[in-house]
Length: 566
Image 1 (cartoon, rainbow, N blue to C red):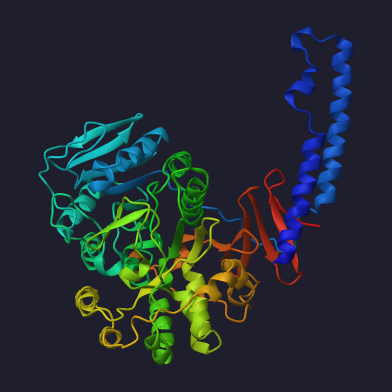
Image 2 (cartoon, rainbow, N blue to C red):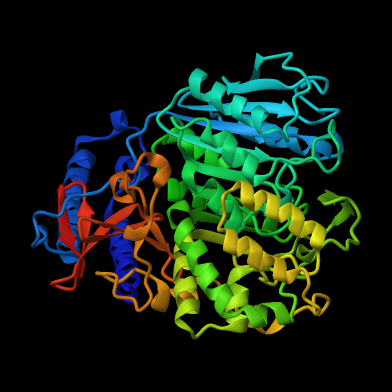
């Protein structure tokens, strides 16, 4: 793949030369309007145009020879031919809106994107005593649609719906699916997050400890087998866990989740909604990366931003990941129980109230360890990274992390966590209930109880060594990636073993949209019919790799043919 990067750089250089030789509009008119040109000037420009065409042809010939040796290689689309989409936004404004207006600020971003013609955006507002804009009622739940640059009310007087009940969620999904059918669907949870055990949704009209668990989410989605989501995302804190991914896997192709505490900026909606409105069939992985990148960029540049971490997960890997995690965990049981591996990662700029993370004081004592969150990759690298169980786990984990972003501050989190209930019987009781309802492995649930009685739960492991060495997922490509033709990486993940089982038994290959991101080379690749395709998003360049000849060919739309790179 190093060759790919070098070739693309050379190609971009040649394209630059072609553009250099191509006259722009001002040069063609020589600073004058066409009607004012003399005959002599026109002849001169005609001669110049002929010479320029010769130069362009020479540059193109230098670029490569037309006609790939394998004429059977078909082009593939980067995305789908979908012409419509529906985004369902389950917006529980909570104190984030009543105190800070964060929900209506995000609604403003959505409206400003111009979305609404090709893509339906349906928002259910609830859980807030006082909304700060758009005349949204705090006394009843309402449903809205973004259309024609406005927020239009489509359902009123729904009553004071409890967003933490699975019935409320299920009804909203059903309403959107029947009233706004589309070729593809996305779902966004908007509010507080409390990890995989506590779940989602502090509702100002309900008891402080009422929440929508991931088991209740799963049951709500299961009631609508006719609706399958390209993405289920959570614009809320600390929900990027193995358990969350397993709970949602039957109902979506990808999830977008944060392992960290989100800043008050939350997701940035304008940019990616603009893109989706323009191209409703755009590739799901590429769309997810736009969402991730926009959040990281906003937190870097906006004075209100903070440390941020977000990842997109390929849900076809969820069951394999759970299996690999259990094999690693059982093998390293003694090590896991001799220290507390929950992360002492600070929630910056927050104060604590119950088990929810509340924005408030600059001085905060809320950490991921309060939710018993342990970063999976950090565990592997700190305990055992040499065994077959460890390498199989990293291979599956890397395949699960479709794309990942983190702000430029000290990078303490790698994308996905797991919950280990160190010394907390009450937490374990809640965990057992949720995991049992999800039909998780009974042996695993009982095994977790051992962490409750662990005597060293107050002795936290020091991850500083790992944090100093961790430099992103790119360093794992050579050993754990699948970016070499034939999947010849030593521990490359076999994507054929994944299962989008929420799609009626259809396998992943039928979607032709499962582009995989190479973190080291900053390029997308896809295996289709034993062919390795490559896609560079910045140049919009599609290539394929000919393994027999060890050559790379790019698709030239003007020639309608593959052209060898040189």
